[in-house]
Length: 97
Image (cartoon, rainbow, N blue to C red; front, top):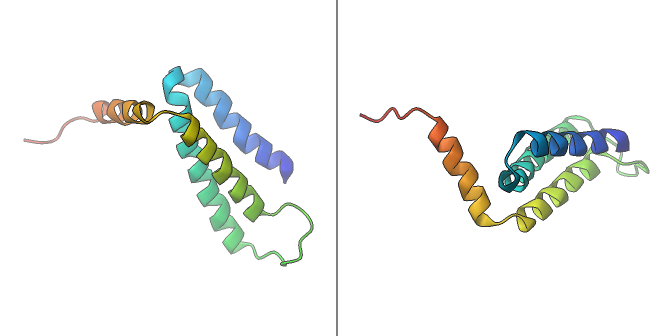
């Protein structure tokens, strides 16, 4: 389970560093980790594990994703997130008359 957590954290980070501009890496990485945390929570709700589990559970992984996502959001600056959202809005074709 720990290997899965490491892969799901490191792989998006490496891809974001190589595919995005440096100022967009932290906002995108933060959003991606929150999405991964949501998937881990859904999986944890569907797979019932005893309360006395000694190993790392999906709830722990969801908490780790959330913690790292919050850290990336805190370390990133708000203007970086605004830059990312503006760039995504510019990619959409305007359908307004």
